[in-house]
Length: 187
Image (cartoon, rainbow, N blue to C red; front, side, top):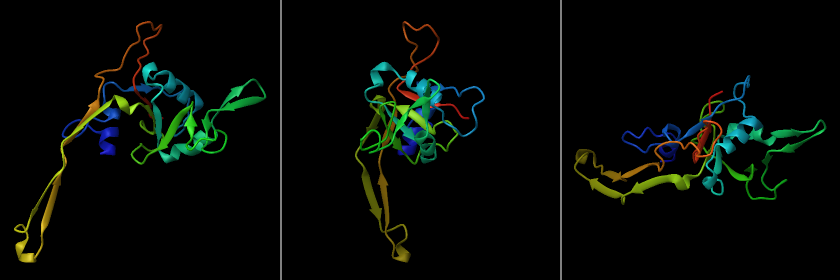
């Protein structure tokens, strides 16, 4: 189910955020090295998140992204810098790491580093999930001659993002779209 919510096609399964029309994909930086995540990527992804979703949004990453986050900094002047990622319990004294003040969750269903979906900023309160109660059935007839019983469980569930498309801000000076689901393009 987690994988369907993340990357489902919507055909016979949930429509995942990576395949939804409301998702926005932030472009990589010019001459960005393959399989990297830079501070500029993260800052620009955060800027593409709808303002109303900022208080609830969280980062979802593949574990391979974590070492790059831990050394990520923004240069300040010629002699210093500011960390972008705050590790758990260390600099932030929080129970989890944060990136631009939002929690970071390492998940198994995130794409491998360098692929779209390796780092996602999302507010899943904008994802609609509907399910019916799980049903079960059993039969002793299917493999009766082998003294075996068969079981079946069915859980009807469907889900998709609530927005049909990304939003172009009313008072924007560029054609940049915003969404509760922001990804970084493959690099």
